[in-house]
Image (cartoon, rainbow, N blue to C red; front, side, top):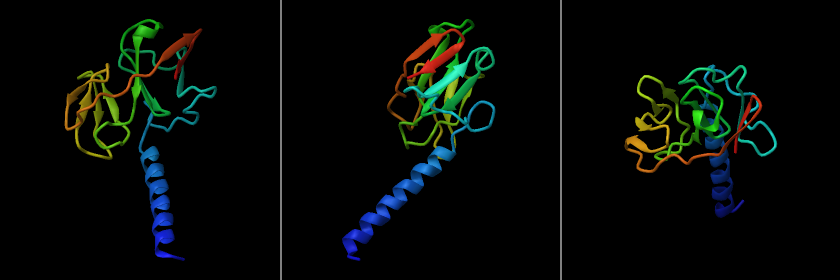
Length: 145
């Protein structure tokens, strides 16, 4: 095997290993990984509003999204859906802190960036906002795309 081929193959293997490691660090509000994070049909994340996210401050992370209930009622404006990928180091944000109303990126990166529920940076070192995602609600099913 030539040196160039070896380095290319090694780079691909490392990239796949890192991607898998970051995905394993995300969590849902229950503490268990979401077994169906995509929800199917092009959805990044779905939630059953009859049994999930019932209280203001409840959140769910999965499918590259953090979904937060920010107000009462089952309307689109009662929720915030943002990319769960920290804009500083690319890891998955750790949680939503309902005491401070901030999205926290503490682990695995450990750098301490914080974001508002609109996605804006509250505390660095991150300098770019989290991307907003589209929410639709049909009956008791909330879908993020």
